[in-house]
Image 1 (tube, one colour):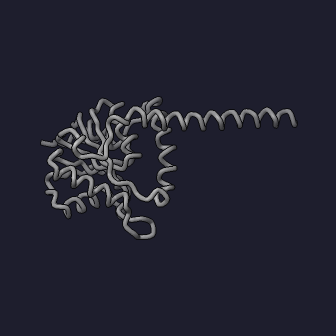
Image 2 (tube, rainbow, N blue to C red; image 1 turned 90 degrees about the horizontal axis):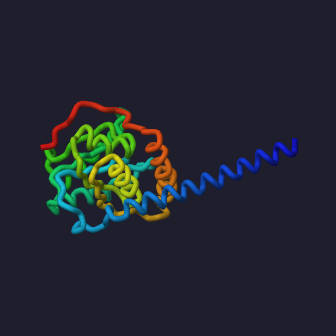
Image 3 (cartoon, rainbow, N blue to C red; image 1 turned 120 degrees about the vertical axis):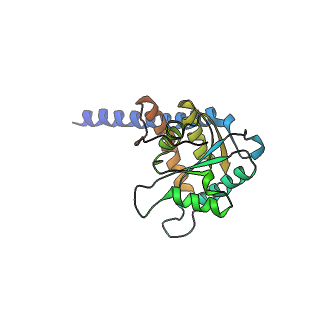
Length: 214
């Protein structure tokens, strides 16, 4: 019995170490491969017809404003006003009647003076994979500027390029590293899952009719 327990413990230990190594490798690999395509500087962003603004909740669970949301909206507005893009796809979660990321982003962008007809809503951006693939398959965009925080852009740009999209990332301002600790820790696992999705050919949850961007 003791011998069996020792063997099981060794197997568990080996699997744990292998898992940690894989997580570290996946994060390093995605950061390295996307590094040349993400930037904090407007002047480094190529002129592109369309950007995709990745969704997050407008407010935190305690009711306070979500700095990730606020900073992404400002980044999108700056990019539009710099005339580097003409249209913005706002892609996010709308699986509940009382929660609508795309509409929240649309209204926030309009408050910055961006015309409503320049904003396209994607209500099925439940995951980053869904958002970037749908930008190509539903909205017909083969070149994109992705707008989110740097840690998120790294993953989104990597996914987009793996799916045949000429993608670049414009980094919104990050939040306090302690305030965003949970988000950053979750990102380590999200980057690891990217490879799982690629290996098993995971596709967006929903398709739909084509939406024409002029």
